[in-house]
Image 1: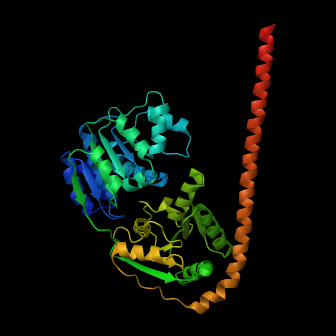
Image 2 (image 1 turned 90 degrees about the horizontal axis):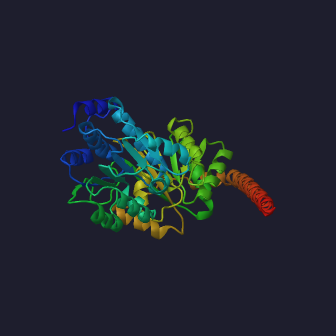
Image 3 (image 1 turned 45 degrees about the vertical axis):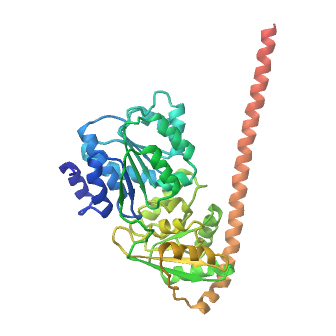
Length: 423
């Protein structure tokens, strides 16, 4: 039921056959029904909601037509790229509204009234409350991509605010790889008589993904990481850490040992985050170290190996992380590090995906031969981290000083004015 113009656009993107979720969701969406789409990550969810929206836009062209909410900024940019690619021949304009970017330029973009807005909830609410003349009263489509994550990141109040200011008479699509209680609650609030398009009801990982674990003592974690990167050299890696600090530390450690590693985490500026992603996508760097900022929805075609350096505390995050490889029918590997402290978390993951993972074959002696070099690199990494921290602190202190100076100046100026008035 998709029109020829859009079919040609799909053809140019190299989409020959619709994926399972697209086969299920698109015909129902074209009939004008609300949809809950459940499909594992990497299964073409973006196309499943972008095509019906673009088709409806062709039939009744209007500005501020659709709103897509996503949990992370990187995912918002990626969805925007897909809308631009699919809608280029029909002149669709889309705008990305996320934090970390100047609000003024975003307000100007909103004033031009694009057809599609892709946004993170926090920044969108900010514009709804503060940008004059901007409203979503004419909105026809609302999409929540990775809906469970939007709600898990406690955007609930923002989502409530958005639902209050958009028309009741609209089409709503909820897409997610995992269904949670919060999503069910939202479904009752936001959807009218929805159709459920579930491609995978139980939590599963893609068939072409080879999953392994290694059981190691916590203090030799770095040495084992270096060993695996050497063993599988020539591949591209995504390594997941649990904190921004550990991501930065491990990146510095690997750089000291001569690996082309690059970090991506929430404490970096938005430009740096996009820069890291683009370098990795362009294959200028072979190792991307990331927090869970990058575990959702990011489509980087050439990730060969995903390493869970720190085991995820929520088992469902494991599915999203390992879903960065073996996408769109390709094969891939994932290796999870399990230390003496992670056994219970690892058992939960095995229970969730319903299979026992094999151990990755290792040569313990070779790992032990690396420990000296790794210990030296650890020392350098710690020193660099400390220096970076001090630079940041001194920069913040400078900002405080200038603010204080401005405050004093204003007070003095205020005092002078009062005296003049008295005369």
